[in-house]
Length: 138
Image (cartoon, rainbow, N blue to C red; front, side):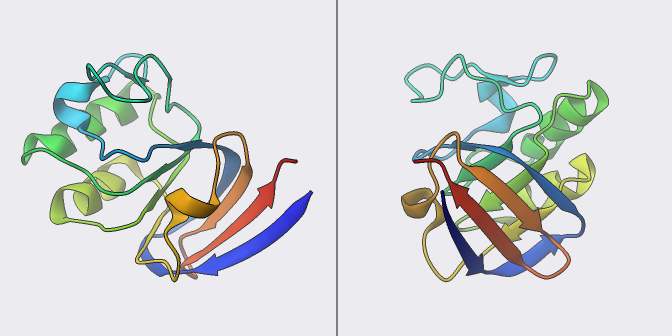
């Protein structure tokens, strides 16, 4: 096992840890996720068919309109939202989504998280301090 800590900027408070689900592609919550299951349904997306529910979701950015946060809220109501989010470049839609899902979130990290974190790694997100700790699985 190899451990690494990267610093960023806090978006939403709280601490969560769990298995990473990493997307190299932006994610569209509104039309690309089933809010009842947390499964990514966007055609052509590399994570199509995988669930973000309870995972530490690592992604470069969100895509979509203001309905992004409505879909995020539906995920939260169904109990299918991610445990935490690590977003390389945040926008207002993804920031609001973190708030409505009550999901610890960190952004603007010193290195691109999608390049150093792999799906399956154990990740701890400290939204209070803006820190992401990674335990690499060998």
